[in-house]
Length: 190
Image 1 (cartoon, rainbow, N blue to C red):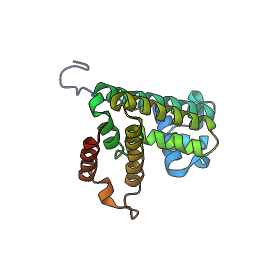
Image 2: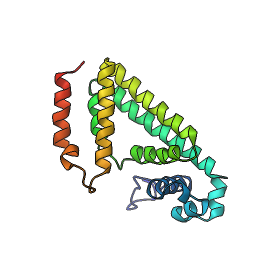
Image 3: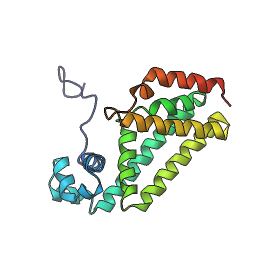
Image 4: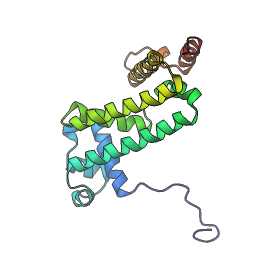
C-alpha cells in the first residue's frame, strides 16, 4: 500500500500545471471571449506566474494548439464510445447533446470561440470533428438523411440546453422529451 498502512490511497491526481493552464485558457475563452484570453489573465486564472505559463507555452498560438489537441483526444474518446455500440450511436449522440458542461462540450465551445475569432484552423478542426461524427453515425445508421437528422437534432438540443434559464422552452431539453423523440426516430429508423 503506498505510503504505508492507514495512508489514504489517492484515486485521482491533481491537474498538472500544464492542464491547469489549458483549463484556464479554455475557461476564459468560454466565459470572457478570445480578447480576454491574455497570457497574464491565463496565468492568473491558472494560479501560476507568467513565467510559469511561458515555461510551458511561449505564446497563445501554442495554447491554442494544445486546446486543439485536447479536443481531438476528447472527440476520439467520444467516437470510441459510439463505435463500441453502433446500434446505440445515434441515441448516444442525441442524449450527449444535453451534456453542455462535459469536458468535450467545454473544449468544443472554447475552440468555437477561437473559430469565431482569429483562428481559421479552429474552423477546420471543428469541421473535421463533425465529419468524424458523421462517418461513425453513417457506419452505424446507414442512412445519410437520418444521420443529418440526428446531427441537426443534437445541435438543436445542445443550443436549447445552453439557453437554460434564458426563457428557452425547458421541455425541449427534458430527458423525457428526448426519450420520446428517440422513440419516434426509432419508428422511422433507416
